[in-house]
Image 1 (cartoon, one colour):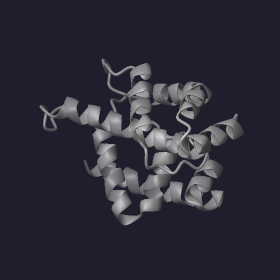
Image 2 (cartoon, rainbow, N blue to C red):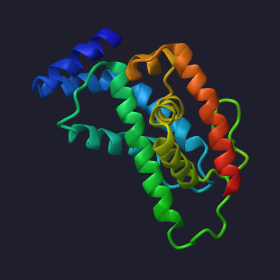
Image 3 (cartoon, rainbow, N blue to C red):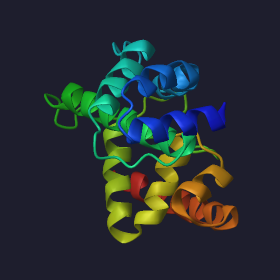
Length: 185
């Protein structure tokens, strides 16, 4: 499946518009699984549904004409970034009228997943990731690819051009930095 997805991405990059239609069934379930995971940690009563998140990301992917697709991992990383942006925009719009009232801190465990028992503040996490990207863009990208993309260390290393050991080291340091930043809010 990975080779098929990579072949279709390359064909799409070279102008074969039907390649995207053939690619979607190969990655759709994986995108749904990841979208469901992201939404599982959202506040109770969150109205954005898994299918809507995947479809919104898909619509944005279709409009990404200048992305130089490399392989399945790269596609999933871009998809993860798009889903993150959609969720952050949604969270910011929801919290816009509150101006901080009722905002709860993001809870992170060993895998930097949102705790179900606490309402996650995706906007605070996004702000912390933005701050981290200004200090160390690679560490920020590692968090994004692991947390939002669900990629493993070897896949992240492939996307970023570093070893899996470097990814794991970046992940550990980024987690500590993010926990400290989120504790300040």
